[in-house]
Image (cartoon, rainbow, N blue to C red; front, side, top):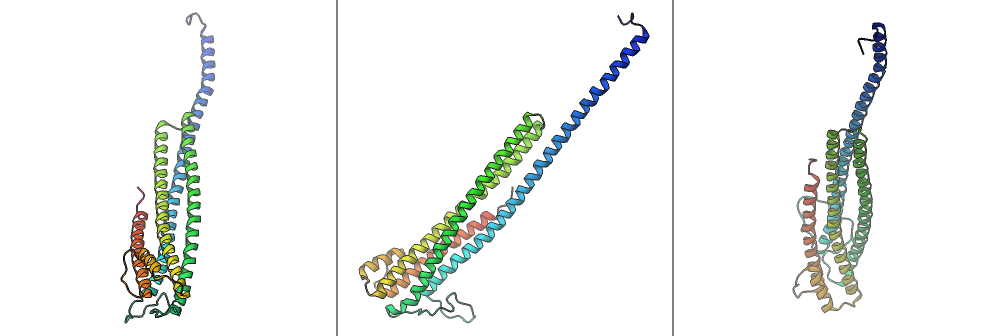
Length: 286
C-alpha cells in the first residue's frame, strides 16, 4: 500500500502525523512535570509540618520542666513549714531564712493556747493545698483536650497521605516514608501524654495525703484548744497520722511526733517523684 501512495502524499501524511504527535508529547511532558512538582510540594509540605511538630514537642518539654519545678518546690515548702512547726531545726551558725520567718509561732508549746498560731498556719496550708489540687485538675483537663486535638490532627495527616497515594500524587516510597515519620512523631506525643498523666496522679496523691494529714491535725488542735479532746480517740488518730504506734507521752509531743513522721515520709516520696519526673523529661527525641 505504501508503494502505491504517491511520494507527495506520503510526505503530507508524515508531516500531519508529526504535527499531531508534538502537542500530545507536550501534554504528556507537562503532565509528568506537574506530577513531579505536586509530589515534591507535598513532600516539602509534610516535612515542614513535622518540623513544626517537633518544635512543639520541645516547647512542651520545656514547659513541663518549668511547671513541675515550681509545683514540687511549692509542695516541698509546705511540707517543710509543717515539719518546722513540729520539730524546729536547731540554730545553725550560717544564716538561713526560715520558712516560718515573720510568723509568731511558739515552737515548743506547753499549753493548748500555744497551739493557736500553729493552728492558723495549718489552716493556711490546708487552703493552699486545696487551691493547688484545683489547679492540677484544671491543668489535667486542658492537657487531655490538647491530646485529643493532637490525635485528630494525626489521623487527618495519615488520611491525607492515603488520599494522595490513591490519586497518584504520592509515590509508594513517599507514602511509606510519610507514614513512618508521622507515626514516629505521634508515638512521641503519646509518651508525652503518658508522662503528663503519671506526674499528675503522683502529685495529686502526695497533695491529697498532705491535705488529709493537715486536716487531721487541724481537727486535733481544735479539740485540744477547746478542751473537748478525748485522749484515747486522739491517740488513735495520731497513730493513724504517724504511721505507727506512738509512745505514751504528753499529747502535744504526740502531735509533734506525728507531724514529723508524716513530713519525713512525704518528703521522701516527693523527692522520688522529682527524680522520676526529671529522668522522664530528659529523654531525648529518638
